[in-house]
Every structure is written in structure tokens, then in C-alpha cells.
Amino acid sequence: MIILDTNHISALQYRETPKAFALQARLETFSPDEVATTAITIEEQTRGWLGLIRRYPDVHRQVVYYERLVRLFDFFAEWQGLPFNQRAADEFRANFKWVCPGSHAAHASTSSARAGFS
Image (cartoon, rainbow, N blue to C red; front, side, top):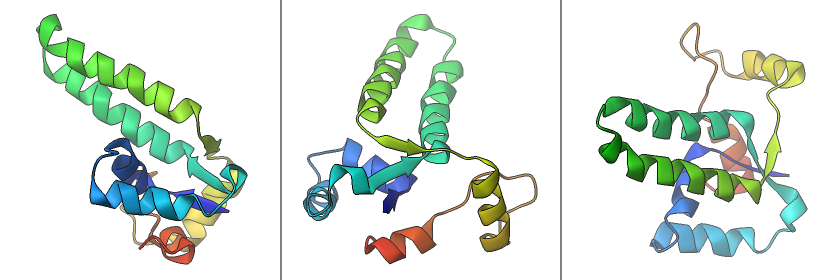
């Protein structure tokens, strides 16, 4: 299984960039069932847009960010999302000891390197 982290998903959202083209070409060599992202990536992306919405008290400035948030939901509807369950938490704790205490997110460089996306 190929697991895409937040950096990969961000690249794919900007489809007209060379990075997105290269990643999409690589992904096309796999079955859609073999490619997924994680609940953590979905949370990070959602938190980013919600943070921008909260930053601006003027509702008219929020409109563009709400539009992006809805597009994000549409984007993730096409993806298999892997849960952050007890097994994932155990794996995280065993493999990502360098993460700051209290943090629940980690850079998935290990998965990315194994998948050939580093």
C-alpha cells in the first residue's frame, strides 16, 4: 500500500505544478485500492482551512476559505482514508520517538521513502 502524507496531498491539490504531474504519473502505476492517505493528513488539511477562516472576523474575507474547505471535502471523498486507531497509535509511538510531547502528528518520511516519493 502507498500512503501519501500531507506534503503529497498538498502537491496533488495544485494539479498544474510539475511536482503534481510527476506524483500523479507515479500514482497511475498503482491500482486506486493501493493508494491511501491518513486521518492525520485529513485533519491537518482541515485544520489549516479552519484556521484561516477563524483568522478573519469579516465574513466576506472568510468566503474564499469556506469554498476551499468544501473543495477539500470533495477532494478527500475520492480517497481511501486510513484511520488513526489504537494500532496506528502504537505504531506511531514505537517509530516516531522524536516528535514533541503532546503532538499527535508526525512526518511520514519513512512511509514516503518506502513508497518511492521522497
